[in-house]
Length: 330
Length: 257
Ligand SMILES: Nc1ncnc2c1ncn2[C@@H]1O[C@H](COP(=O)(O)OP(=O)(O)OP(=O)(O)O)[C@@H](O)[C@H]1O
Ligand SMILES: [Mg+2]
Image (cartoon, rainbow over all chains, first blue to last red; front, side):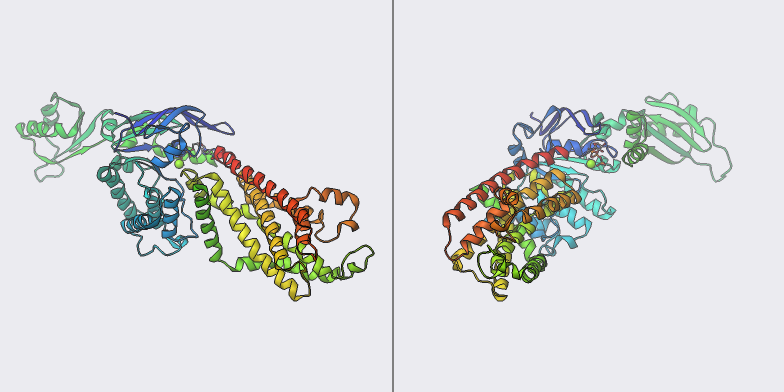
């Protein structure tokens, strides 16, 4: 099947020797949310700018909805909706005027345009503020207006460059449900860039980790995490009312050797182990403990986070990479 | 047709912006009014210089001030574009199918409309302080037309510079560098026969002078319409060049993002 977005070996450098993209390649399947995850300066926005025809790659090729971004920019522009990293709202116009002009630019007009504008204002909770100047909108309202504007011509592919950065957690959660609805409910393809590990985890069916203009890993969030050394399982052993009493030293031997369980260790009252798929391993583990009459107080399975994934593929933590980028830009 | 419609949409946006701050037109009129009244009073006696044709300096000056105002204010047109660049508004339009020409032309049409409004105010004021326009309403309309052409031309130039420089300070420098010399290298304040000959020759190639010459001819008692048409033609040609330049300048901007 044809991919909704294809990027193949994109290279782009800026004056002063900054290589923003260094052979970036990825594909996004139609109707899915794809996340580009990376720290500041990784090249996410540069990739979006190329894919949305704002700028051209030095090398490589890319297509959106099957259309080449360099050879057929006008067709790409019709197929794509774009929410840039900074807002693109005209703050001297009202929300309605912004939406109307955006529609007109895509060739819409008359009653059908007014209807569409009204619909979007309603859907993004801007109906009451529709005729107020956008300068007075809150950050969340401006962002919602940005997204509404990107949707006015009903694009098939939507680019959202850090749509939730700077929003408070409540507004962010609302935005998340709106974004997942776009792909699930309306069959749109969404490319989302983000700094937030949990955002990529939550929204993206597949994601790519970008570092220094290259993709260092890609897959579904689950796949990426599974490629790590497995989940951590922590079993808290019950102590039969006597808190100081050391647990039965037979606990580790009870589970050692179970299929898929590794690195068994006892630390105080915590029985630690690793498993490729922690969720699957737990029932057998509990059974084995029960068979050895070891009482269990609680069990926790800790999934590796995308942070762990990032660390594994780039050799530094996400926070360290962000700090480094901040250093460079200073 | 699409281009015309898109230009109209953009013009509506800019005029609406203006209508929300109408005092702006007034503020930009302060300077020309001072030119008109102050220079009009200061150089009142110029008419006594042998070789000066006519007997009222303010009547001579008024069309010049109309033209000058058109240029001065339109030359700042690029400032608003830089604000749009900084706010991401231009980038949003550039990833839409809208024609680049429309993005510039919309601004120029707005400048032309502002020029006509301001020119009207200046002409009324000039009439109050004793100027006359013997060419009648038709002549005044022609003066407005060449002023609007000149305003749009400088608006185009300014927008092109804005896209290439992308910084307010740089644009301010460029505008100031251009605007005053062009005014003084023209017959805005003085009749050509009283100017040093080198200035007279330079003025022949100065678009501001084309507009002043055409505007003054059109409002005179016996207009030389051939002269008006030729200067208007030069201006129209230059406007087309500036529009093309500004449209191309988007490429420079897009290379920088
Ligand atoms: N217009 C530009 N001119 C010069 N350098 C640029 C420009 N845009 C981006 N860069 C540089 O290219 C690199 C990639 O930038 P880009 O904006 O694509 O990163 P990003 O992943 O979007 O970062 P962020 O998370 O901060 O938005 C950075 O080093 C940046 O400084
Ligand atoms: Mg970015």
